[in-house]
Image (cartoon, rainbow, N blue to C red; front, side, top):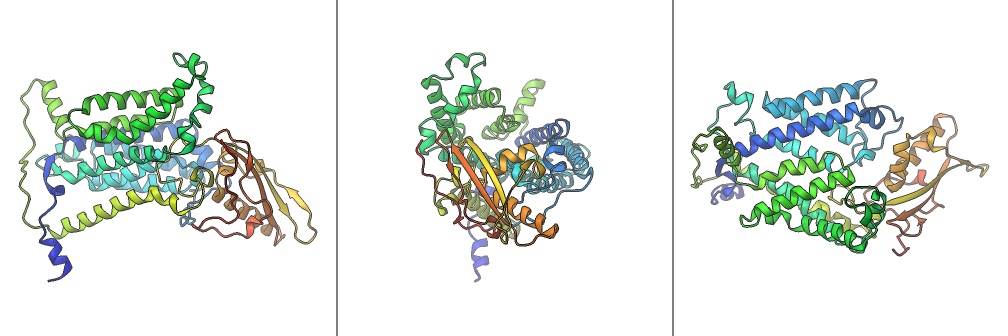
Length: 456
């Protein structure tokens, strides 16, 4: 008997037990509306122009150098189309088709500009991929009302646990990352709170250590324990209230975009899967009619399709559990080196104040030419790229290629970058004697990176 045959005869996982699919419909609506608001803010607030359209240089993720920006008004048009697609997803209109296009288009915008990375941007890419496979249009959708999808209103329980698991991973690894020296000693929170002295309620106390401790240990505790507390029925509603308060407070003070609102909308995933149908029946004054048939009896044998799905879910879970830990493969603090910082849910852990100077050197005459950053980078890029050694390296490669296009080959590029991390005394981040234009991009530790030596 082959290995595949043996696996297919194993007792099926609870992953394929049917549950009420109304939770998926509610989440589909939340996801579609959050995506629409985020896209509309990008278009209306000018972010599409100054992040994707205006810069002459775009920074790439390793391995995705082939992803390029659309020319002309292409990015504006793409975001407009994504806005329409997000509404279609929320309504459940041509759901499989529109959710696939939304994932492809939104993930393209993410990959096209590394300097614009944000954790919620990455999270929405992951969720948009899930939505392709989750049959969230079986309930409360135009597709179901029109009869384009045949369903008894149930979905496999793996769809619920996939979404719950992803949200739990964001929280837990966000908390795990906070178990570091700087955070436990109040930085950079202490540094940031001083900017909110004019805020109602907290303004008079922003320099008080008890307020710093409240944010430090409150945020740490919530991230580490909120998911299990939401799953336990005895603490679920209290945890729900704490989570709601936390995200509203985050939004009020730190203004971190749509992330708090998305997490608020995702919190009901930890309730019973039939809660939207029960709530709707109560609101209408009607008796609750469950979706069905819902049984606890699993089939005796996994189908080939279920076996493939189980394997893929296990592989995805392993990747998501290991990726946030990859910083352990690199020497130094990831808040300093940036290696292993992205795709790891490391949130609000670093404040960098940077003074950066780039120099072009003619190797023949040994004459140095200072680089005017405003000739190449828009203001937001000048603030962001100097924090990240990989983007600094990309910029140095770009400068060398520019000189080659002008007929001056073999120019060297040096960077003197003095950085203060979380209020420390500034120190050099990179070796200023290394010609960065001659260094290759790799996923290995950067030998031209200086270790963090200054104390907090």
